[in-house]
Image 1 (cartoon, rainbow, N blue to C red):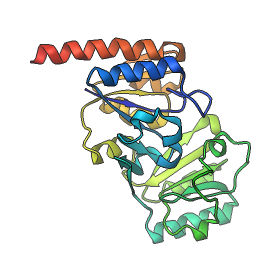
Image 2 (image 1 turned 90 degrees about the vertical axis):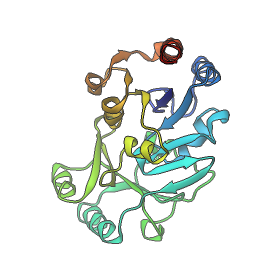
Image 3 (image 1 turned 180 degrees about the horizontal axis):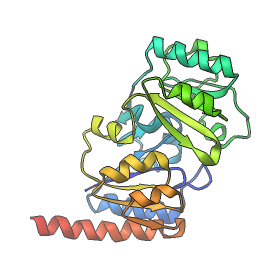
Image 4 (image 1 turned 120 degrees about the horizontal axis):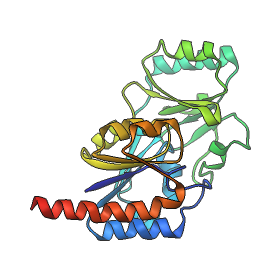
Amino acid sequence: MNFVFDIDGTLCFDGKTIESTIIEALTSLSDAGHEIIFASARPIRDLVPVIPSQFRYGKLVGGNGCFTSVNGNVSANVFTPNLMEQLHNIIQTHQLTYLADSEWDYAYTGSLEHPIYKNIDQSSARNITITELEKICKLVLFNPTQQVIDSLEQLPLSITAYKNENAIDISPLGINKVSGLERVNVHDFIAFGNDSNDQCLFEKARYSVCVGDNEVHKYASIKITKENVAETILQLKEKYIAEELRRH
């Protein structure tokens, strides 16, 4: 069985590390023959440093579906030049701060204290101006007004709101974690997530687990606390081994 895991707020709670008990549960899951896929809002650049080393060359989905990586080969969806020009005009008109991700480098103008900035792997990428980025795959806008949101909703975009961070995540239309999974040929899966960008996973998954109290839990099969993540992984490992045996 395929198991799909979000990272931040699901497996990682400090922006940098995954607890040893969770890593042990993931390893046990893999050893039992299940495939582990990570699907994060982070681009592949920022996803790879936080996941256990044995999974870094597996199937990864980053940037809420904008990026995929298989065996370390990264591919990305990008905004069209025309759409990027319209987004740039909205940024300029409303003097918005942002994070723009290209295939590897990025442009960031927000607060240096923001958790999104702290999660960027600055050792492997450059922070350059948005006009220097040849291609833009994903855009996060900070503190958008309702007027900004209304303007964006007129454009062919996928928009995810992060209420706790007062930010919105923007991708090309039709891009989300499920579309990213489909591009790496993952269609049937168990999902673990915690936030609004995981709703599509919960709706598509055979079984889904929401970590924490975010209102998105209503789309999941069950809701658990972060203290129960490792235990739940191990329980589902056994359940779906048993299910596979019954099938055969």
